Length: 285
Length: 267
Image 1 (cartoon, rainbow over the protein chains, first blue to last red):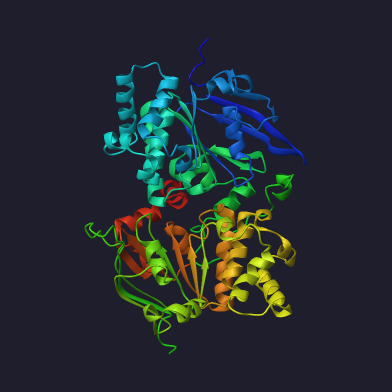
Image 2: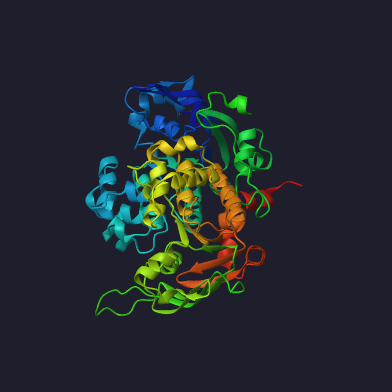
């Protein structure tokens, strides 16, 4: 039975990820609720150690070996990610990582790297794959896709490399993208262009995006809804306007207060109390 | 000469040579002029390729300039060479973007902080130990950190150590190259607060280089915006922020939370 469009594409209730180490268990994710509707760009904001990246990795089935995933519900489009994450990865769920220079292979041409993805995921003859690669590069706003196709990663700027990585993610045919700090390695002006590109692609191609970031400015620039993570727990969620204008949780307010343009010039910036390994974020709240 | 600015750059032109017979490329810095007054902070803003790092490296005398002048504390800074240059350069402290690359993984924090003093010819002894502890506490870290190594520090703690090291020889000028770009927003806030404190306490002048205009607008007294080698904007921070001359500057300022809440705030 096909699910109606009102069902969220992603439904997570009480997700936890526990990683065993020689020094004992690390509770990377403790209790995360996340619901993402089709066509949304949903921000997941938190700082180093908040569990935001591990939440994304759990959806991709890429948690460290031996990790235990617990969840009341962990569903993508009606399928249980606990069993299906590996199968969905690269078919329905794609990934855009922080550092495009690290995501791309330095010794292979862009043409080869996109073609590899197309060959793996799409059943197309050679000529059609080339046409598709060009179309994808053009869709990401790269000027002269022919030339980009012949290039190697080092011949491209950071912004161009990130556009190639986005084209690669689209090449899989995935309709849900996990973008983990996609603009953190980029200059502000380039970041703005890449975020605008993501918004346009989401609208044009019916995509859904989970945007993982530590930067409220990125959330404000690109997202429809946002979930705030603190010490492995989701502490607040809602439409971006509402969370920015009326943050309910003290930690969200602190994150906003730490932005350099939150206070008059030279005034002291808010300092976020407590640290990520604080076992009880409510206690800090 | 207390009336002269700490740093004065006039018509600075920097060009990288492509090759012996290659055509002369466009300059990386195309005639930059600005002043840094004593005890103030100048923010230098630009994206990759804007020339901001070339400008910085020329000021540190790590890069030859084609033409133009740099005066530091009234002296012709480009005329210094060899030993005299190395000695004079001790008056400039440098903090770079990634503390884990700039701090040796093999040394303890105490050894890291002692290094500039030993290199400058101070003798090891109790004086240096006291100075190291003072530097560390100045930068907000307890003495317990003296025996740690870089890998045992968080990003913010490591950057505090890097700042302490830059202050070890009591520089008049502190050069900061993207000092918060690798940090979380809340850690960035702590580092920006620390820099304000240090500036007051040590009467430091600072050059703060970054691609993020909003970060530096918070701490800088004046701003210089570079684009493709040209200085496109230079003036007091208030003026640049409230009446930017360039659409590019306005765009950089419009990024993020502030403009969205201002735009969509229901009345």
